[in-house]
Length: 171
Length: 195
Length: 158
Image 1 (tube, each protein chain N blue to C red):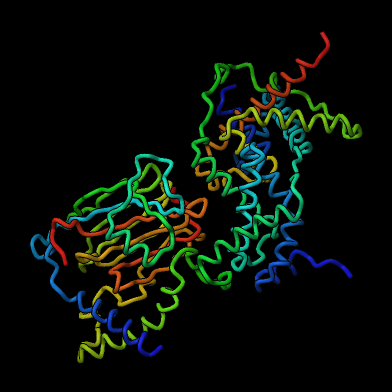
Image 2 (image 1 turned 90 degrees about the vertical axis):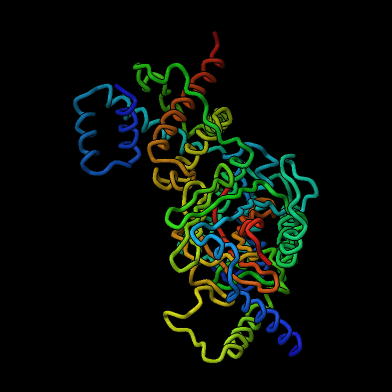
């Protein structure tokens, strides 16, 4: 019996095969004693391990264990100066300067108004609109991953666009 | 008065009630620690990672919408942190396959029979210790797949996505891990048999 | 309060004006866009465990510090590359992370960030001389990673 077939039998035991392939392996186990023996052993071994999962518990007291968590939470919040993010919103980057973010939205509104006031007659159209939006640029950021959240902002004083990517495994 | 449910504590935590969150930690801390320990196999690391998971849990609790149980949601955070930890410490390497990889003796010869007796508490306790000791001898890569499948009940596809490997690799690592674990268990048995 | 708002509006407004200045790099050679990509690690640790890391240039350090709150920033890698008018350019930032940058007909560039082989985020915008684009996220142990894109200084700028 080759490795590929052994792994197929394993997948069948684990309920991971599509119906047609599961039927093929089921038929095989009826005619091939080695295949049947492997399937039965895998089933038995799986039960053996699952029913005897090693148990581990924490030696530290409730207070001691919690104190380090609380400390970590406070440390992160001191950096952010904000409560846990509101439901449905992208999480605020924990170490982005709180004072800076606090000014972002008002500055965006005022600056946008000032921008158009300084350039009379330059109302954007499909052809003349500048492709770089003035401050908030969320609509040009995409991620195909459901778990990824993004927060995008632009600081003209720092000439910097920031895309903060949350919940992403990059490294 | 009945103690609050997890759902009630989660709701209170989402409103910023840290005492409610502390109660959730107290209820589930051993489970999260055990999950971390099964993957990283180091007491101190598991402790740190489980605490880090709780910190992240608090930071993200507003995003928890109850599509799974709170414990399941926290488990996912814990597992992801542990896998990140292994990757960062370059522990996520796969053992070179042993010589018997391609033999045709069949796994059946290497898998021990089901020899647990659930009515014997001591025997079961001992068996758990043996399984634990054998798990510790697997490579991080093989143990992770086995733990996610057997103890966290994740399917092949979910393991592949969580670990970042193909389904074929999941199958291969799981098969190898089971066989290796069986050999280790059998070896422990043999060593303790009277001659 | 009003004074601060107006001051900020003025600063921001001035920033907008730069969008309409000609771009020396593009004016000189509109077909190719020379960029620099840096992978930076933000941490509160004073010394990196990896000795190959080096401090980032002071001007970038200053800019990052105005927005982010990590105590130290170290450069992991720095790559200069050129983006042609038609084909995207791939740049490996690390073993797990790479970017793909492509010019768009609109004058923007499309930046795609891949982590562990998966597309994590895609961003389109102009990168003018002196401007920086930072794609960043949390790392373990309260650290952070930053992918910083700028036009190469040799091509001119403010």
